[in-house]
Image (cartoon, rainbow, N blue to C red):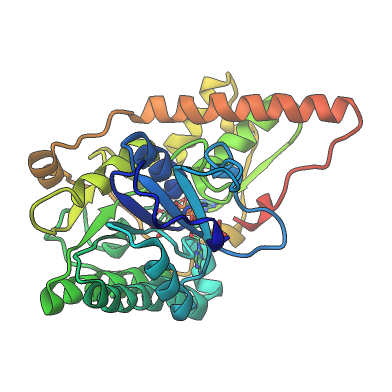
Length: 361
Ligand code: NAP
Ligand code: F7E
C-alpha cells in the first residue's frame, strides 16, 4: 500500500498525522476528527485474512486517486523495522499510538503477547521516532494511549497524582508504556503526552467489551434474536464516556506548548448493573428476566471502582465531555436496534448467519 504515497504533493496538506490502531474504535473517530481539521491522515493496519477496516471504510476511498486525506500502511507494533520504514515514508508531524491488545480479560490469557504489543510496542515506536527525529532534524509530537486501568486498585477519585496499582497484565503493560513515554520525554526532550483515558464507548465499541455486549444483546433480545445474556461481575463501577469526545482531548494534548499527561473522564461512575438497567429499561425490558451470571467472564483480579477527576484537562485543555451516561446508552442502543432489525430481516429471508464471537468477551 505504501506506493500510493505521494510525498512531493504538499498542496493539500496542513499537517500529517500517523495513527497506529486506526482500525480500532478510537482510531476511526480520531481519523475522522483529524481529517475534519485538514490533516492528511496515515494509518497503520495489520494484515488479516479477512478485512478489518469496517470502522474506517467510510473514510477510505480508491487509493488510485490522488490527494486523498487518508492513507493506509501495513505494519505491526511487534515489527520495529516496519515502523521505522513507515515513519520515513510518511514524515509525520504528529503520531498517535493507539494500537494495543486492549482487552483486559484476554490479557490474562495472552500476557506475553499483550506485553509485546502494549509495552514493547510502545518502546519500539519511541525508539523508531527518536531515530527518525534525529535523522529528519524535526520534532514530531507523539500521543500515547494510557489507561485508567493503570490506577487499578487505587481508590477513587483518580487523577494525575493518583498512584498506579495495576490489576491485570494489560494494565501492567500500560504502566510500562506510560513510564517509557515519560522517560523519553525527560531523557531526549521528546514531545510525548500520555492521555490517561477512562472507559469510553460508542456504537463502534468492540462487541466483547461489556457496554457493547449489553447493548447488542438487549436489542437482539427485543427483536427475538437472542434469549439470554451471560455476564460476569455486575458490581464493577466504571466512569464511562463517549469515544468521539475523547479523541478531541488526544489532539488537544498535542497542541499544547509543553508535553504533559492528562486524565480524561466524565467524573461520573456507574456499575455494570446500572448500565444494564439503563439499556434494558430504555427498551421496556426487565434485565433480570434475561441475564445469567457466568464465571467465565470474571477476571482473576478485578478493578472495582474507577471514577476520574479531569480538572486538569478542563483547566489547561479547555476540554469537557459533551455526551452524558444516558445519552451514551441511548446512542448505543439506537444504533444496535437498527442492526438487530437488519438481522431480523435477514433471518426472515432465510439468510441469517448468527452473531459472531459473543461468547468470547
Ligand atoms: P480497540 O478498538 O481494541 O483497537 C485497537 C487497535 O489496535 C486496532 O486497530 C487493532 O487492530 C490494533 N492492534 C492490535 N494489536 C496490534 C499490533 N500488534 N500492531 C498494530 N496494531 C495492533 O481499542 P480502542 O478502544 O480503540 O482503544 C485505543 C487505545 O486506547 C488502546 O491502546 C487502548 O488500550 C487504549 N485505551 C482504551 C480505552 C477505552 O475505553 N476504549 C481506555 C483507555 C485506553 P485490529 O483492528 O487489526 O485488531
Ligand atoms: O469491562 C465487567 C468487567 O471489558 C468493564 C478497555 O477498553 O477500559 C476497558 O477495560 C467491567 C469489568 O472494560 C462482563 O469485569 C462483567 O469490571 O468493558 P470491559 P475494562 O476491563 O474496564 C479500559 C479503560 C481500557 O483501557 C481497556 O482497554 O465489566 N464485566 N461482565 C464484563 N466485562 C466483559 N468484557 N464481559 C462481560 O461479560
